[in-house]
Image 1 (cartoon, rainbow, N blue to C red):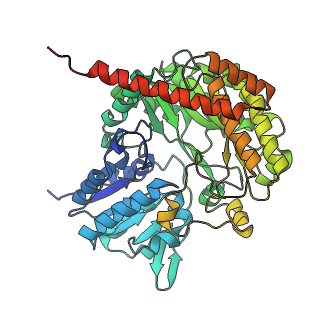
Image 2: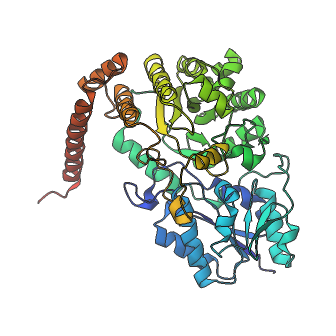
Image 3: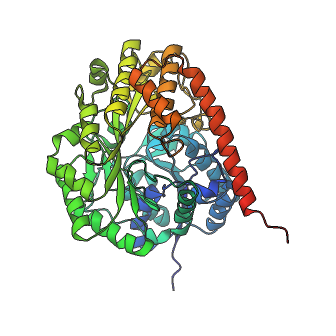
Length: 519
């Protein structure tokens, strides 16, 4: 019997410095991109080995990949902005050190917008750009047959003195794409850490909608038709949007839930709600199949307000419990410059419409955009505060802007003097919106202080820190109502000291409770 050619795929780790070992990530994140590109080669008769780095300590993950590459046809990896950039690079170096002649490839949005940087490492035979499923299928066939890679559309190839692009690859719809090969994954390493953490913290009890106990991630569309200047999708997808039909999505999730037993789904689509007909069909199919799941999706304010009231009711009935809306800015002029179709007051109106239906809404804002003035930044903080006061279930968040390669605003930032990371290792440090200012000096200190206090008090006011409403939470609610934060900096610091002592005491009590008793 002919031995099947092996393809090895590596999903790099997203985090380097997080509480607990890397293989105990409390995330729903699954290697969706690699499942997607592995589907057609599997159907074509190849053996596909997928290693998810987030489920192992880094050294162990790389060891498994290197071992699987023995006698393999090819190796491929991916990575988005952040630590994945470094981890995929380090794993590929380990692979090439042991198997120097093995063809190696990389794809995904970050590689698609920085292909020359990837090829400059000397590690990769090609970079796949844009939608990758059909490109990877043709790539595997070309490597096996020895055909020149120039014949495969959708690649960037290394050449003397630079790089060349092959013919562009057309974006295809789900009529040409297969369902994810879920059998490549063991659900246990994704379920167990989530359930342990929920049991430890009592997440969501009495605060906001009921949380899933075991959540998976899912991908049901490619691209986005909106021209946002801060986003890489317009260049990555060419403003194309292709989506899995709602009924097919519901059927795939129903079958997978019967095998895995999850109760939550985190949709990773860039824009889940482009088509009202699709989301209605999905919700109706879940209800008809009696599939009980809680689910999260990325939505746009204009979509929520464009849909019929009955559609919103249906989504809530079908399990939509939380979503993320890109609020972006509270200033009309800045919004127009971002080329996003969100009108004045629509972020608040959309959050209110969802809040009335029991749906939690995270509304994200950016401050420090290229060319943005102080008045615009204050308008974003004011709108975020208005949502926090009007919508008890909503969580408005305000983050410093980060220039993203492959975007209009990235080029604007460069023109204004922003200095980007010099190489892949430096880009790997990017992505921490919580603590990292990607553009030092861009946001005035006073606005940074107001932002920090808003983020602290808005989270505390909802009971999101201690999972209860007490004295600290009521004081936080008062600070939000007043909106001045006068004298609040010292109080915020005092809370962090007291809460740190409380958490330390809880840990010590837990350790004592688990200690063996003397006989």
